Image (cartoon, rainbow, N blue to C red; front, top):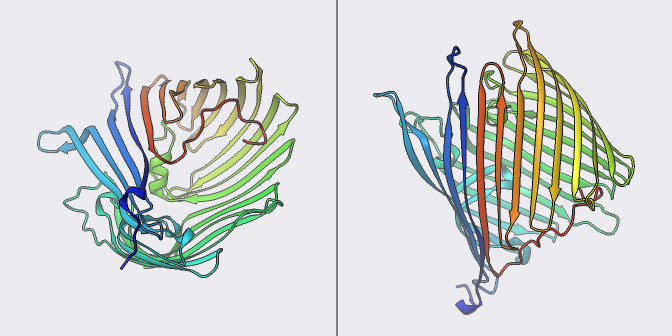
Length: 435
């Protein structure tokens, strides 16, 4: 039986957030195209109730609601109707590993150390040392969270059994700047690749290795072991930092589902597994002026199409007591189906209680089919901080070309409550070293 402190000793903290996004595609009068307008309202409530027992047990809840004005398809009358979706992403009773030799979770929770976004069940772990712990988990995958919204719930045939174990090694940093975080897991769980259901056994690894104050290596591996061997996701980054130089080298592989979610606004290609590499070099000329050079390449596996991307840029933040920053970039892209050039400009301002950013991009696209487009994009972002606990943001973007025009608007406002300390209001622009 658990010994407990009085209920009055419990503390609570959390956040509430509401936001929305609206996107509309317009075509010139003589062009017919498939529109994909979006109007979504979403809200989120996240709360922890701590200190329930002498072992610091706590309850964690994360609930989200999404109202999609065009979220439900009515195939009989070929129309879209509004749909409201409530998700309980987390509702769990937990004993923290930080202050206990043995620890557990019961309810619905994520297992991020194994790449599991939602598990209905339980986990139990043992901490061998302050740096090393082993955890096993078992349960059901949360069907409403794991399944993509694009899949009809009447035909998806979901099998949600999942379980596994992971080992975490974590060594905090010292005065020399060295630290290590590494998790390795073997698990079985259901997954989706676009519209295809997969019940897979996989190995998951994630690591962050700080090799002193100037060097960092980050890694991620998500590879199937059964029913077939396949590297789904991979990520390797090396970063170097000094007073004048910053270097970042990245190689990664993503799934077709990742591609679908993150592709650029004008990309209409079929989603595909993608392998990419990037190099960024930044040089600090003086306290206010920095230059940047970038090279990247990528290749799609489904059709063999490849792309290359180069740009050079410069930024200056010495205006208005270093609150105003200006940036200019010129780039060349040998894209998957076109040869592109662009100029990108940006201005941003930071203050105690708000910040503002405006950007403009002018491109020239020469497609392999002979068509030529000149898209331009303007974007604005406003962040405001009403207090240490209340903050929000607004954003608008407009992308126009000869074949279409795409506009989008978003807003968000959030409030933090409870006894946990909140982040202070920004008093100044972050320095080069801090960034």
